[in-house]
Image (cartoon, rainbow, N blue to C red):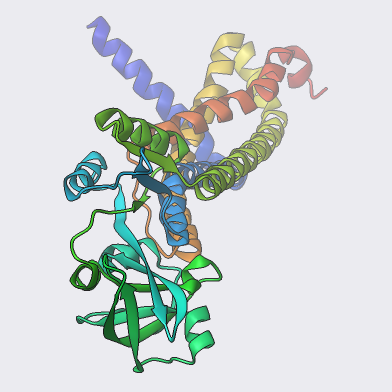
Length: 383
Protein backbone atom coordinates (compact mmCIF):
# COMPACT_ATOMS: atom_id res chain seq x y z
CA UNK A 1 0.00 0.00 0.00
CA UNK A 2 2.80 2.38 0.98
CA UNK A 3 4.72 1.50 -2.19
CA UNK A 4 1.62 2.21 -4.29
CA UNK A 5 1.23 5.59 -2.58
CA UNK A 6 4.87 6.48 -3.42
CA UNK A 7 4.33 5.55 -7.07
CA UNK A 8 1.15 7.62 -7.23
CA UNK A 9 2.87 10.59 -5.59
CA UNK A 10 5.80 10.37 -8.02
CA UNK A 11 3.46 10.12 -10.99
CA UNK A 12 1.50 13.12 -9.74
CA UNK A 13 4.72 15.11 -9.30
CA UNK A 14 5.85 14.52 -12.88
CA UNK A 15 2.34 15.25 -14.16
CA UNK A 16 2.47 18.63 -12.39
CA UNK A 17 5.93 19.32 -13.84
CA UNK A 18 4.73 18.42 -17.36
CA UNK A 19 1.64 20.60 -17.00
CA UNK A 20 3.76 23.52 -15.79
CA UNK A 21 6.05 23.22 -18.81
CA UNK A 22 3.15 22.98 -21.27
CA UNK A 23 1.56 26.18 -19.89
CA UNK A 24 4.71 28.14 -20.75
CA UNK A 25 5.50 26.67 -24.10
CA UNK A 26 7.20 29.68 -25.67
CA UNK A 27 9.72 30.17 -22.86
CA UNK A 28 10.30 26.47 -22.38
CA UNK A 29 10.80 25.92 -26.11
CA UNK A 30 13.47 28.63 -25.99
CA UNK A 31 15.21 26.86 -23.10
CA UNK A 32 14.79 23.47 -24.79
CA UNK A 33 16.34 24.76 -28.03
CA UNK A 34 19.27 26.25 -26.10
CA UNK A 35 19.86 22.94 -24.33
CA UNK A 36 19.47 20.95 -27.56
CA UNK A 37 21.92 23.23 -29.39
CA UNK A 38 24.45 22.94 -26.58
CA UNK A 39 24.01 19.16 -26.48
CA UNK A 40 24.34 19.00 -30.28
CA UNK A 41 27.67 20.80 -30.18
CA UNK A 42 28.80 18.72 -27.20
CA UNK A 43 27.84 15.40 -28.81
CA UNK A 44 29.10 16.37 -32.26
CA UNK A 45 32.44 17.77 -31.15
CA UNK A 46 33.14 14.90 -28.75
CA UNK A 47 32.38 12.45 -31.58
CA UNK A 48 34.80 14.36 -33.81
CA UNK A 49 37.32 14.53 -30.92
CA UNK A 50 37.46 10.76 -30.63
CA UNK A 51 37.34 10.23 -34.39
CA UNK A 52 40.01 12.84 -35.28
CA UNK A 53 43.00 10.53 -34.50
CA UNK A 54 41.61 7.86 -36.83
CA UNK A 55 40.70 10.31 -39.59
CA UNK A 56 43.88 12.36 -39.30
CA UNK A 57 45.96 9.19 -39.07
CA UNK A 58 44.58 8.13 -42.44
CA UNK A 59 45.20 11.59 -43.88
CA UNK A 60 48.80 11.63 -42.66
CA UNK A 61 49.41 8.21 -44.19
CA UNK A 62 49.21 9.98 -47.54
CA UNK A 63 52.46 11.76 -46.64
CA UNK A 64 54.52 8.59 -46.79
CA UNK A 65 56.04 5.99 -44.49
CA UNK A 66 56.30 6.86 -40.81
CA UNK A 67 58.61 3.99 -39.78
CA UNK A 68 61.87 2.67 -41.22
CA UNK A 69 63.57 -0.61 -40.36
CA UNK A 70 67.29 -0.95 -41.14
CA UNK A 71 69.99 -3.45 -40.17
CA UNK A 72 71.60 -2.66 -36.83
CA UNK A 73 74.95 -3.64 -38.38
CA UNK A 74 75.69 -1.61 -41.52
CA UNK A 75 77.65 -4.56 -42.92
CA UNK A 76 74.56 -6.78 -42.89
CA UNK A 77 71.20 -6.79 -44.69
CA UNK A 78 67.57 -7.62 -43.91
CA UNK A 79 66.51 -11.12 -44.89
CA UNK A 80 63.11 -12.21 -46.24
CA UNK A 81 62.47 -14.02 -42.95
CA UNK A 82 63.09 -10.79 -41.05
CA UNK A 83 60.74 -8.97 -43.44
CA UNK A 84 58.01 -11.41 -42.48
CA UNK A 85 58.82 -10.84 -38.78
CA UNK A 86 58.35 -7.10 -39.29
CA UNK A 87 55.06 -7.68 -41.11
CA UNK A 88 53.79 -9.97 -38.34
CA UNK A 89 54.79 -7.45 -35.64
CA UNK A 90 52.45 -4.80 -37.04
CA UNK A 91 48.71 -5.36 -36.39
CA UNK A 92 46.98 -6.04 -39.67
CA UNK A 93 44.33 -3.37 -39.10
CA UNK A 94 47.06 -0.77 -38.46
CA UNK A 95 49.27 -1.58 -41.44
CA UNK A 96 48.67 0.70 -44.43
CA UNK A 97 51.64 -0.44 -46.51
CA UNK A 98 55.08 -2.06 -46.26
CA UNK A 99 57.76 -1.66 -48.94
CA UNK A 100 61.17 -3.38 -48.82
CA UNK A 101 63.97 -1.71 -50.81
CA UNK A 102 67.24 -2.77 -52.42
CA UNK A 103 69.42 0.03 -53.76
CA UNK A 104 71.79 -0.63 -56.67
CA UNK A 105 74.17 1.64 -58.58
CA UNK A 106 73.60 1.73 -62.33
CA UNK A 107 74.38 3.76 -65.43
CA UNK A 108 72.23 5.19 -68.19
CA UNK A 109 74.15 6.68 -71.11
CA UNK A 110 77.29 6.42 -68.97
CA UNK A 111 75.69 8.64 -66.31
CA UNK A 112 75.47 7.20 -62.76
CA UNK A 113 72.04 6.71 -61.19
CA UNK A 114 70.51 4.61 -58.41
CA UNK A 115 67.97 1.83 -58.88
CA UNK A 116 65.43 1.28 -56.10
CA UNK A 117 64.10 -2.25 -56.29
CA UNK A 118 60.87 -2.58 -54.33
CA UNK A 119 57.48 -4.21 -54.00
CA UNK A 120 55.41 -1.93 -56.23
CA UNK A 121 52.13 -2.50 -54.40
CA UNK A 122 53.75 -1.67 -51.08
CA UNK A 123 55.42 1.46 -52.50
CA UNK A 124 52.08 2.52 -53.99
CA UNK A 125 50.34 2.12 -50.62
CA UNK A 126 53.10 4.08 -48.85
CA UNK A 127 53.17 6.91 -51.38
CA UNK A 128 49.67 7.98 -52.37
CA UNK A 129 50.99 11.55 -52.60
CA UNK A 130 53.34 10.58 -55.48
CA UNK A 131 52.29 12.33 -58.68
CA UNK A 132 52.48 9.70 -61.40
CA UNK A 133 52.51 10.69 -65.07
CA UNK A 134 51.70 7.49 -66.90
CA UNK A 135 51.12 4.42 -64.78
CA UNK A 136 52.74 2.20 -62.18
CA UNK A 137 54.79 -0.73 -63.57
CA UNK A 138 52.60 -3.80 -64.07
CA UNK A 139 54.72 -6.00 -66.30
CA UNK A 140 58.27 -7.28 -66.28
CA UNK A 141 60.97 -4.85 -67.50
CA UNK A 142 58.83 -1.78 -66.77
CA UNK A 143 60.12 0.98 -64.49
CA UNK A 144 58.93 4.13 -62.80
CA UNK A 145 61.40 6.89 -63.56
CA UNK A 146 62.08 9.84 -61.28
CA UNK A 147 61.13 13.18 -62.86
CA UNK A 148 64.69 14.57 -62.57
CA UNK A 149 66.18 11.56 -64.35
CA UNK A 150 63.54 11.64 -67.09
CA UNK A 151 64.21 15.34 -67.67
CA UNK A 152 68.00 14.91 -67.63
CA UNK A 153 68.14 12.14 -70.24
CA UNK A 154 65.03 13.11 -72.22
CA UNK A 155 62.84 10.08 -71.55
CA UNK A 156 59.04 10.03 -71.44
CA UNK A 157 56.29 7.45 -70.92
CA UNK A 158 56.61 4.53 -73.35
CA UNK A 159 60.28 5.13 -74.20
CA UNK A 160 62.80 2.28 -74.03
CA UNK A 161 66.29 2.67 -72.58
CA UNK A 162 69.23 0.55 -71.45
CA UNK A 163 70.42 0.20 -67.87
CA UNK A 164 74.00 -0.95 -67.22
CA UNK A 165 74.63 -2.59 -63.84
CA UNK A 166 78.07 -3.72 -62.56
CA UNK A 167 78.89 -7.41 -62.14
CA UNK A 168 81.21 -8.93 -59.57
CA UNK A 169 84.02 -9.41 -62.11
CA UNK A 170 84.10 -5.72 -63.02
CA UNK A 171 82.08 -6.04 -66.22
CA UNK A 172 78.56 -4.66 -66.75
CA UNK A 173 75.21 -6.16 -67.61
CA UNK A 174 73.05 -4.23 -70.08
CA UNK A 175 69.28 -4.62 -69.70
CA UNK A 176 66.50 -2.91 -71.67
CA UNK A 177 63.54 -1.36 -69.83
CA UNK A 178 60.40 0.57 -70.75
CA UNK A 179 59.25 3.72 -68.94
CA UNK A 180 55.72 3.00 -67.69
CA UNK A 181 55.52 6.32 -65.83
CA UNK A 182 57.43 9.18 -64.24
CA UNK A 183 57.12 10.19 -60.60
CA UNK A 184 57.14 13.71 -59.15
CA UNK A 185 57.31 14.19 -55.38
CA UNK A 186 59.55 17.19 -54.78
CA UNK A 187 61.88 14.83 -52.89
CA UNK A 188 64.63 12.30 -53.41
CA UNK A 189 62.24 9.93 -55.23
CA UNK A 190 62.70 12.09 -58.36
CA UNK A 191 66.33 10.95 -58.64
CA UNK A 192 65.63 7.20 -58.44
CA UNK A 193 64.70 4.45 -60.89
CA UNK A 194 61.95 2.29 -59.40
CA UNK A 195 61.64 -1.30 -60.55
CA UNK A 196 60.24 -4.50 -59.07
CA UNK A 197 62.41 -6.67 -56.85
CA UNK A 198 61.95 -9.52 -59.33
CA UNK A 199 63.43 -7.45 -62.17
CA UNK A 200 66.32 -6.29 -60.00
CA UNK A 201 67.04 -9.85 -58.85
CA UNK A 202 67.09 -11.00 -62.48
CA UNK A 203 69.89 -8.48 -63.13
CA UNK A 204 72.06 -8.66 -60.00
CA UNK A 205 70.97 -12.02 -58.59
CA UNK A 206 69.39 -12.74 -55.21
CA UNK A 207 70.29 -10.19 -52.54
CA UNK A 208 68.92 -9.26 -49.12
CA UNK A 209 67.13 -6.00 -48.40
CA UNK A 210 68.71 -2.65 -47.50
CA UNK A 211 65.73 -1.05 -45.74
CA UNK A 212 62.02 -1.60 -45.11
CA UNK A 213 59.60 1.34 -45.16
CA UNK A 214 56.35 0.95 -43.21
CA UNK A 215 53.24 3.11 -43.15
CA UNK A 216 51.35 2.46 -39.92
CA UNK A 217 48.12 4.06 -38.77
CA UNK A 218 49.22 5.06 -35.25
CA UNK A 219 50.15 8.08 -33.17
CA UNK A 220 53.67 8.74 -31.92
CA UNK A 221 53.23 6.80 -28.67
CA UNK A 222 51.80 3.72 -30.40
CA UNK A 223 54.47 3.91 -33.06
CA UNK A 224 57.22 4.08 -30.44
CA UNK A 225 55.82 0.97 -28.74
CA UNK A 226 55.86 -0.81 -32.08
CA UNK A 227 59.48 0.24 -32.66
CA UNK A 228 60.47 -1.11 -29.24
CA UNK A 229 58.59 -4.35 -29.89
CA UNK A 230 60.38 -4.99 -33.21
CA UNK A 231 63.76 -4.13 -31.69
CA UNK A 232 63.21 -6.47 -28.73
CA UNK A 233 62.05 -9.26 -31.03
CA UNK A 234 65.15 -9.06 -33.26
CA UNK A 235 68.26 -7.23 -32.00
CA UNK A 236 69.80 -7.27 -35.48
CA UNK A 237 67.11 -4.83 -36.70
CA UNK A 238 67.13 -1.08 -36.08
CA UNK A 239 63.58 0.29 -36.39
CA UNK A 240 62.97 4.02 -36.06
CA UNK A 241 60.15 6.50 -36.62
CA UNK A 242 60.19 9.17 -39.30
CA UNK A 243 59.98 12.07 -36.85
CA UNK A 244 58.96 14.76 -39.33
CA UNK A 245 55.78 12.79 -40.08
CA UNK A 246 54.90 11.48 -36.60
CA UNK A 247 55.73 14.73 -34.80
CA UNK A 248 53.65 16.77 -37.27
CA UNK A 249 50.73 14.36 -36.85
CA UNK A 250 50.78 14.60 -33.05
CA UNK A 251 51.14 18.40 -33.09
CA UNK A 252 48.16 18.86 -35.42
CA UNK A 253 46.05 16.39 -33.42
CA UNK A 254 46.75 18.10 -30.11
CA UNK A 255 45.88 21.52 -31.51
CA UNK A 256 42.65 20.27 -33.09
CA UNK A 257 41.59 18.43 -29.93
CA UNK A 258 42.36 21.50 -27.78
CA UNK A 259 40.27 23.62 -30.14
CA UNK A 260 37.38 21.14 -29.85
CA UNK A 261 37.43 21.33 -26.05
CA UNK A 262 37.61 25.15 -26.02
CA UNK A 263 34.64 25.48 -28.38
CA UNK A 264 32.65 22.90 -26.38
CA UNK A 265 33.22 24.70 -23.07
CA UNK A 266 32.27 28.07 -24.58
CA UNK A 267 29.05 26.68 -26.09
CA UNK A 268 28.08 24.97 -22.82
CA UNK A 269 28.64 28.24 -20.92
CA UNK A 270 26.40 30.07 -23.41
CA UNK A 271 23.79 27.34 -23.00
CA UNK A 272 23.91 27.71 -19.22
CA UNK A 273 23.46 31.50 -19.44
CA UNK A 274 20.50 31.12 -21.80
CA UNK A 275 18.76 28.53 -19.61
CA UNK A 276 19.46 30.56 -16.46
CA UNK A 277 17.99 33.72 -18.03
CA UNK A 278 14.89 31.85 -19.18
CA UNK A 279 14.31 30.27 -15.77
CA UNK A 280 14.79 33.64 -14.07
CA UNK A 281 11.99 35.06 -16.25
CA UNK A 282 9.81 32.04 -15.41
CA UNK A 283 10.35 32.52 -11.67
CA UNK A 284 9.43 36.20 -12.00
CA UNK A 285 6.25 35.34 -13.91
CA UNK A 286 5.23 32.74 -11.33
CA UNK A 287 5.74 34.81 -8.19
CA UNK A 288 2.00 34.81 -7.45
CA UNK A 289 1.75 31.07 -8.01
CA UNK A 290 4.76 30.47 -5.74
CA UNK A 291 3.30 32.80 -3.09
CA UNK A 292 -0.03 30.97 -3.22
CA UNK A 293 1.71 27.58 -2.85
CA UNK A 294 3.57 28.81 0.19
CA UNK A 295 0.39 30.31 1.68
CA UNK A 296 -1.30 26.92 1.30
CA UNK A 297 1.53 25.26 3.22
CA UNK A 298 4.08 24.29 0.55
CA UNK A 299 7.63 24.28 1.90
CA UNK A 300 10.57 25.99 0.24
CA UNK A 301 11.99 22.54 -0.53
CA UNK A 302 8.78 21.54 -2.30
CA UNK A 303 8.81 24.68 -4.47
CA UNK A 304 12.50 24.27 -5.32
CA UNK A 305 11.93 20.60 -6.17
CA UNK A 306 9.17 21.55 -8.63
CA UNK A 307 11.47 23.90 -10.52
CA UNK A 308 14.37 21.46 -10.50
CA UNK A 309 12.05 18.78 -11.88
CA UNK A 310 11.26 21.08 -14.79
CA UNK A 311 14.98 21.62 -15.33
CA UNK A 312 15.67 17.87 -15.26
CA UNK A 313 12.93 17.19 -17.81
CA UNK A 314 14.16 19.98 -20.10
CA UNK A 315 17.75 18.74 -19.79
CA UNK A 316 16.79 15.14 -20.56
CA UNK A 317 14.74 15.99 -23.66
CA UNK A 318 17.31 18.54 -24.85
CA UNK A 319 20.10 16.01 -24.34
CA UNK A 320 18.28 13.33 -26.35
CA UNK A 321 17.65 15.76 -29.20
CA UNK A 322 21.23 17.00 -29.04
CA UNK A 323 22.71 13.48 -29.14
CA UNK A 324 20.86 12.74 -32.39
CA UNK A 325 21.58 16.07 -34.04
CA UNK A 326 25.16 15.92 -32.75
CA UNK A 327 25.84 12.73 -34.70
CA UNK A 328 24.40 14.31 -37.86
CA UNK A 329 26.57 17.37 -37.23
CA UNK A 330 29.72 15.24 -36.74
CA UNK A 331 28.86 13.17 -39.83
CA UNK A 332 28.48 16.28 -41.98
CA UNK A 333 31.77 17.77 -40.73
CA UNK A 334 33.65 14.49 -41.27
CA UNK A 335 32.27 14.06 -44.79
CA UNK A 336 33.09 17.67 -45.68
CA UNK A 337 36.63 17.70 -44.21
CA UNK A 338 37.82 14.08 -44.45
CA UNK A 339 35.36 12.62 -47.01
CA UNK A 340 34.79 9.75 -44.55
CA UNK A 341 31.93 8.74 -42.27
CA UNK A 342 32.07 8.70 -38.48
CA UNK A 343 30.57 5.98 -36.33
CA UNK A 344 27.87 6.71 -33.75
CA UNK A 345 29.29 6.43 -30.23
CA UNK A 346 26.49 4.72 -28.28
CA UNK A 347 28.07 5.42 -24.83
CA UNK A 348 27.93 9.13 -25.73
CA UNK A 349 24.10 9.10 -25.64
CA UNK A 350 23.68 8.71 -21.84
CA UNK A 351 26.71 10.96 -21.25
CA UNK A 352 25.18 13.74 -23.37
CA UNK A 353 21.83 13.43 -21.58
CA UNK A 354 23.52 13.41 -18.15
CA UNK A 355 25.71 16.43 -18.92
CA UNK A 356 22.69 18.31 -20.30
CA UNK A 357 20.69 17.56 -17.15
CA UNK A 358 23.56 18.58 -14.86
CA UNK A 359 24.20 21.85 -16.72
CA UNK A 360 20.48 22.65 -16.84
CA UNK A 361 20.06 22.01 -13.12
CA UNK A 362 23.18 24.10 -12.40
CA UNK A 363 21.75 26.91 -14.54
CA UNK A 364 18.48 26.72 -12.57
CA UNK A 365 20.10 26.98 -9.14
CA UNK A 366 20.37 30.80 -9.04
CA UNK A 367 16.84 31.53 -10.39
CA UNK A 368 15.29 28.80 -8.19
CA UNK A 369 17.08 30.11 -5.10
CA UNK A 370 15.07 33.32 -5.56
CA UNK A 371 11.86 31.41 -4.84
CA UNK A 372 12.99 30.89 -1.26
CA UNK A 373 13.00 34.66 -0.70
CA UNK A 374 9.43 35.15 -1.93
CA UNK A 375 7.13 36.30 0.90
CA UNK A 376 3.61 34.94 0.22
CA UNK A 377 1.91 37.76 2.15
CA UNK A 378 3.60 40.48 0.09
CA UNK A 379 3.04 38.69 -3.23
CA UNK A 380 -0.63 38.03 -2.59
CA UNK A 381 -1.15 41.71 -1.70
CA UNK A 382 0.33 42.54 -5.12
CA UNK A 383 3.55 44.07 -3.74
